[in-house]
Length: 337
Image (cartoon, rainbow, N blue to C red; front, side, top):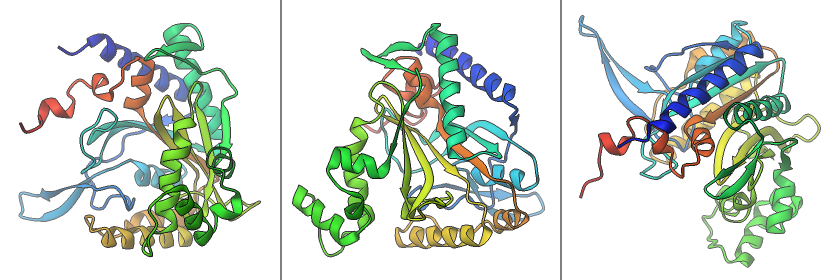
């Protein structure tokens, strides 16, 4: 039997988030959940379907992995700061307590801001949730003491690699040096091993387990090859203005000082689509309407996507996001015996 206490808490937390963002001047929007082409993340598999009209027309169609491209089209039209709380879809990720093929995302964009602006937004939002739910800033999660008291830890990727993996910045940014260091550490390194593969292995095994153990951690300033859709740092273009949020063993969100250069955006999207082909993921064309929207321009903006089911699981003191969902996937598609 589903624990409706957690479901009722979910409803309350979503209400707190919605009230906070509206009070801060964000407009709530709804974007399409049936798309002619999805966003270009190279490592995410998509859900594909077919749209049929009574006249006989048929079209390829996809469910979104996030509302990112649609929200940015609104920004380019001058819509202003906005957010969406919605379902998103990612295929092929398997079954676990932390993943669901259909999940709820909170995505918001702070116009005339950047990733540091969003850090403050998120910190204040989590503190408001805790005040409303617990009437205090400290609480227990699975027997561990957690806190949302500020300021939260802000740790650059370079400093994290030095602190937890004993890898300095020069080594981190060099393919040859990083692969040599990884081999010394006992990682499997072959002639085909890439910098990104080793970077991700070290990040996952040696750094992420230390992050957000009590209060959340902002891991920021990623190497430029990991920029995704983030702006380069003006002070050091080897890095991008991107952060990820870690807390209680979860990666909760991904934030950028948004890339607004349409030429660079096209270049990165086409690179992602090429990598999708190489990885034998579902292929589809670039969303040209997204690029054309960027050509109209929009102001400096900070944007973040947050896994809402994971956030609710922490505040609800449950080890599985499926406890926070009324109809989790395993009840609809039970594992084969």
